Length: 611
Picture (tube, rainbow, N blue to C red):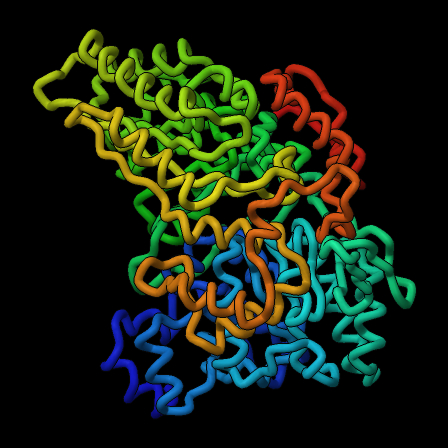
């Protein structure tokens, strides 16, 4: 261990975050390595090590001959301060080598509020922030993840983006880089070549021109770059890599368990949900494959909990037989089985009773809106009757705790819709009084509301976000209508969600704002302990950028959108049609009931199939 690091670690919280050495980490001999990749997660160790996508790509890259991929996480504030004082550059956990010495620096981006962490990590590593300041083939920075579908706020800093699922695309990128390195290409030649890999977007190969009104007027591809960059998908998940033999963290992480991905995509089409559209089409894993992967992963890791994950786990057709097989294994080995992402319209009391033999936890549902009109407008496709029937089944089965998630500020929302949340909660309380079999324990309802954020590639991508002041008015309206001591109500902060909307729909002009904010202390913005809205407002003012232009403005139908170069497979005409249906409070059936022609089934190798 580096002597500077050895002296620093006793001075910081959770030093295990920064030392590596976990069971299952990959160590290679440097003389056998031709290509080194620093795989960066722009948040803390606890968050990054809970991310299954990072584990998948870590495993895939390290299975490649001559490639060594190492992990890098954002340090907490105390560690960063010590590193800067000691002039210790950001390093990779496996070798503890500075990441500025690596061939490639890769980031995975799942949340807009981690953008400042990316810039701060580059600065802490001693790597120039702006892509134009990094010459030569060494130290190229690229990024992927769901936020990459609108890469423009980061276009000044990232050399190229990988759009979509990386299992096949990442090895293609690395092999091209290896060839470029062997043949001593220039950076410019490599970027022109990597832009020809399907799913790769190179910002420097596109010119953005703006109109007098400030909107984007034109996007011009340069040097043979494709007019559209289409996301990559994996067709057959049964053949896809699964990290059964993966790292076992040496300190507590957020989700310290085995994650089993039952399928990708979602059949539902909730109109606010970016992931639901960006991960189309639906592709399931076979139950036999999942069972084999689960047993292998649990036996390797020694984990005492397994989680069946997807955007809507209860929509997996083979869920009950899979859960039955896993239950037998889990009971015999004293392992908890967790089923998140349940829907009120297909809740199986029988299945949950089986699962709860191991551990009875609270049930979680997301009605999202308090009235049927608004649930229809957002295409939630769940009725009040289904919600109350589900709660009745749960309460009669012994549950006394329910978590409910809603949004405030959804398009077309009125005060009646806000008060409808309180009315629905009251009806759930009455249902408990009528159906509970164990009333002595009392009822616990954890109610949470989020501030709606319009996201690219959703039917609401054109919508204006309400102001933070209006959001807080609606919060207070709901608070005043909740009268039961059984309800614990919490809401998301307005300033953070406002900034999230700005970054989600932003363009390249936000680059200087990001750089200014980081230089003046912005980092770890997703954490209450560090988010400072004043820094951001100062950054916008200093750079002459109006954040309301991105968050609180309705984008026009024919407007050139910053993310228009990216194609996730869902047609813009389909999204606009869904927007019109929202204003008519009309629903669209799920993909399993009827194909609505979104276009995702035309992706190369992609088919919409039963989940």
